[in-house]
Image 1: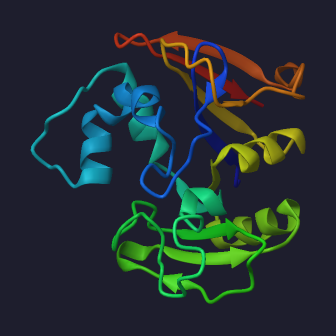
Image 2 (image 1 turned 135 degrees about the vertical axis):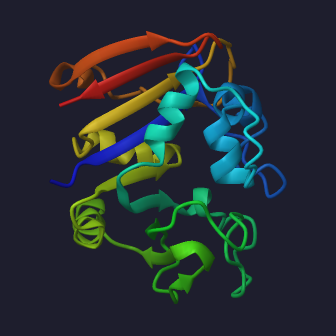
Image 3 (image 1 turned 60 degrees about the vertical axis):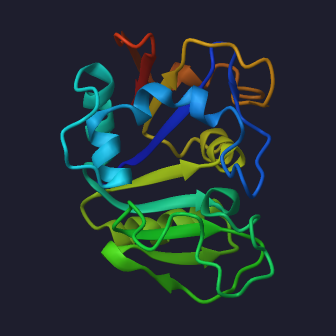
Length: 214
């Protein structure tokens, strides 16, 4: 049965970066926020193509491996794809490179749709949709088959799916730092955890992995 999954990064004070630019598409603080995850063996292999075996292999890596398993389709916002970097360039294919790490259909939520789908190396095809998130989720679920749909972000997309109660499994990586700036993930979501079973696990890196499942 298809489940809807989401993985989010947040600081101890509940922020995720807001200062997205073409040169820093995930925000200036993104590297600090995701340092432990980016240092895992799985991340280095899946994102950077590093098959040397370098990287950490403990708790953070276990969650990184789970991130890449069992996903049949992805939904993301225009910012995560990178439309804000070159909004007027019809040949722009996003900032994920020639072989994006998804290997599935990816549905990009954007008010600039309709626009042609973009097939990429490695099995990823970007589709662009300007529709209600429930409708896009239904399409992604059909494409995923027996696998899961992952909600990739960014912040507005994540909040929209959480507020609509559409997420079955949320994995929150809380980094041991205070950003003091950015988007506040949990505004207007008071009590949403009441419909989930919540567990936590601390990693050697200091990251706290919070898992909400229903």
